[in-house]
Length: 298
Length: 277
Image (cartoon, rainbow over the protein chains, first blue to last red):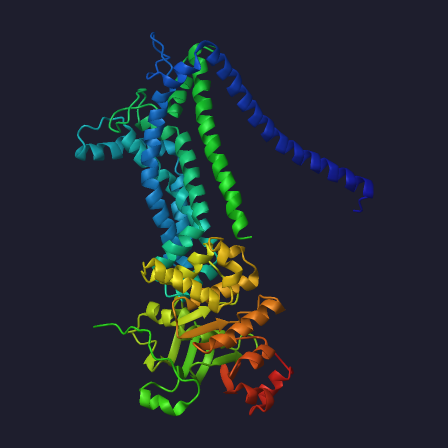
């Protein structure tokens, strides 16, 4: 079939508009979400002074004696994220270095996808695993550990985010030109010296990006902490007691029957925007670093 | 069992008079290659190579792409060790010691036999740290010694005057020719005895190339240099001996002046007169 020039041009324009539309839908959805967050947060702060929100030491919006100290929820998020990172960074980096520098291609092609499977396990399964396996196991060594606690939630979350760090760091390491490794070997460097004095420093911005993205993921993780860390807002740095993270609080309130436009309802948005600010900053840092990192080898 | 290490030899070779060597109890040749064949998997890259490399001279390896000249060069400081399925038969002796012997510490060998690569490959570190790298990985902490070596090496490569005011600048920010001279300085800082150069000027412009060639001629007063080059004029200009390789075999090796004026083999003559390659 022969198509005339007019039809061709028309098709071209329709396709362009369709693609444009797809992009705009995403942009508007994001803007709408942010708009809602800001609007409801504004309503929240019309009644609750910012000072109370930032400096109160209790979070009890669902009780009679209402207190709105976000630090309480932040301490829960901080604790679980901290343990996740403590587990995930050393393990993830060791795996990345092992995969990139100490294995051959064949083993790497089997191991890397297997590891990435860790990220494909639904987080609700991890939550359940933390509550029913890890916590009872840890209780054998730490009798003071309560059933819900930030320690085991953090550890299991750490296992979940290992592939974020190992995969992205491995990508960063393999982007280091092999000519740099050869230069080091040619100077008489051992494999260990080559890895830690040349390859890792040359890949450090990529490695930092992977860690920041992993932190961002841990801060926003919901199911594991909602199941295994408990739902008791508490301003503490004690990893053995139940805490509530920002995400867990949002789940708790969204699941309950809180009336629309009530104060309890607005707390979700205030908590949500706090979370959003944190992940937004983290993502921007990683975006900036990734751009810088790209420039170096181009 | 103690490992054989290459202590930097204090005595340097006299320039040409070969009759003194037996008296000094040192082999006449810096590097001796005997019956070397090497393989990447099932592909044979080198076929029964025999050659001797004189100390304090420039030896050029020439030949068409894939003829095995780079493979042989990399065999001399065992840079092919990390290539899976690589295999070598025969022996390569450095100062009379078989470098493929199991008693050799390969890291020590490479401190004695430095290498400069085809593409300049400075580390993304400061100029100073690039040159100091080899000393630091040897565990040398003496700050004044490191500074002295860095300055000396940069002067040897005529780079000192160009960079002395910003040694903390990142090495990768230099021009291509400067980067390559930085890489040579980096190799010299650990005071090797042999410097292997794998087409060091192939990525550089003519002016930068001329500087490197001048440098190579200067360096042979203190170092034994083996250089792989695609550029026959370059081999003619800077080398004392030339080895011509073809299809993994050493066709001919002789004084450079003889190779380029009156080669013994027809194949060599065809290659240097531009009939193929």
